[in-house]
Length: 400
Ligand SMILES: Nc1ncnc2c1ncn2[C@@H]1O[C@H](COP(=O)(O)OP(=O)(O)OP(=O)(O)O)[C@@H](O)[C@H]1O
Ligand SMILES: [Mg+2]
Image 1: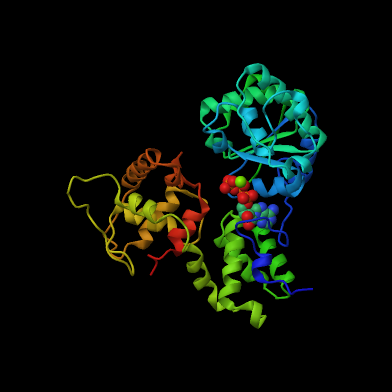
Image 2: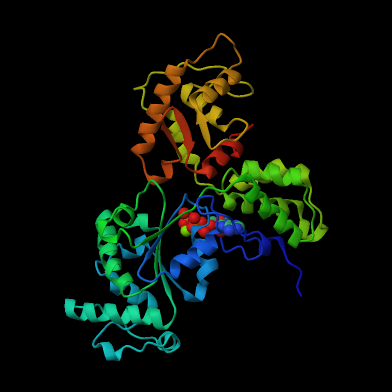
């Protein structure tokens, strides 16, 4: 057998065959896999999975359902079409023209013949096709997964919910996946669906769970990693299994472990930096650091240890990035961090000033695109929404 390479084992962007970690949901005391299996075996119910970005929602479905049985569409697949069933038929490669009887319901023959897909003109045909499609799912033991549901417009979300309501009654197995905050009210708060929902909330990853990725992966590669180092990387990964996979992969590549069969832990910081290279936060940092327009006036700046002088916006970002990396930071903790950063002890930024500045940053984020929603300032706390953003400001190119 060919020796496993580090890129076989650590898979930051795909299904982690060798480093898949099963987690127990603290809400349910069962594994997520068990919960999803059970949900799919409740005929007449729709499954709604909600969880922060990159916490393994898609990977969980792939694990439980298997790629062959999963028909996956995303919220944006529905953008250009008002016909839900047509989009699904297209995805399946089903012919949606003509009569019910013309549709061949064997998956293989449909995929082999490159059949023509025509749009459905009348509502009658559309209704007939809907049943055909549901039968097709049932006969082939398929599960419909509507991934990234939040990408569909609100109007579309309600339309899809309406279609699903009827379809699940006919025992179509379906899962809707979305992020928290970008609410899927169309599903979870839909009176028509209440009592017919299986709710699965994916929690952020805990340090112990993240550590398992490193320990399992390096073990598969026949390389030892001490508990202390696995823990170090897990702390840096915050709550993100993807970040953990990325850092482990980059550490392996930089250490050249596939050749030398040894990990060089002195290269850890270098691997962190390397891991930030492809993160898309350069413009985000720039915008948040600049703050609102001052109409040409210069803000007061402060002397910071080992850095250029920074204004209050720069200092707040720097304080968020300080050690230890935390997913939520109280205003008191932030104030402490800010005080520590100041070189001149007479330089003070009081709590009120910090709060006002945080509110201004929050306003900028709220009025910008999704990529800018990296943290949230509410109830006197900063909540990191994007662990990768925090990692970026800790280790990105600007770091001295
Ligand atoms: N159970 C797991 N064990 C190990 N690694 C995992 C696990 N789940 C996810 N990962 C890692 O995290 C990455 C992201 O997972 P996934 O794409 O499923 O997240 P997601 O929640 O669907 O993200 P998005 O919100 O962007 O759709 C995976 O490619 C893998 O590297
Ligand atoms: Mg996903």
